[in-house]
Amino acid sequence: MRKRHQSPNSEILLQTIVHTMQEKKGKGIVSLNLKKINSAITDYFVICHATSRAQVDSIAQHIVNEVSVKCGQKPYNKEGFENAEWILIDYIDVVVHVFLDLARNYYQLEQLWADAEKTAYDDQD
Image (cartoon, rainbow, N blue to C red; front, side, top):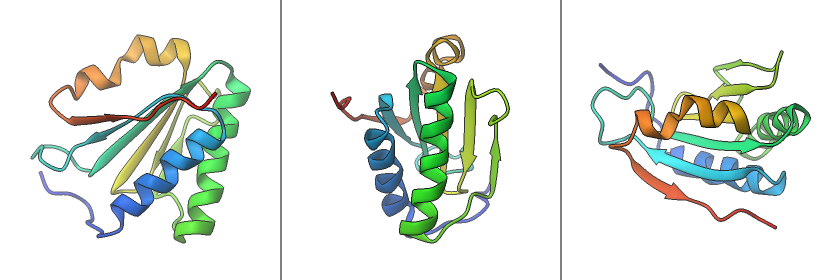
């Protein structure tokens, strides 16, 4: 399977997303580097969670806004804003997952991609 698009700016996009999650107090922020996995169609997954639907929505909206301003990119696709339990924002090279804490525990996305290189970012207090 071939990636949809490859950009040299995926690391800049990744750092912008992580910083934005930290600004909005996202919890358990991790990135999964999928570049070495042949079946992956993206370079990175970035994952975090929040304790309320309002915060999930706020984090996701802030990511969309900040990436647009700082990176000049609009999402290729976005899903989940209706119920704010799991919002997915697809930037092709980086796919963002913002979970409600219970949904993150249930789906265990990191376990599905356990062979990916994982980077954890300390929660901001």
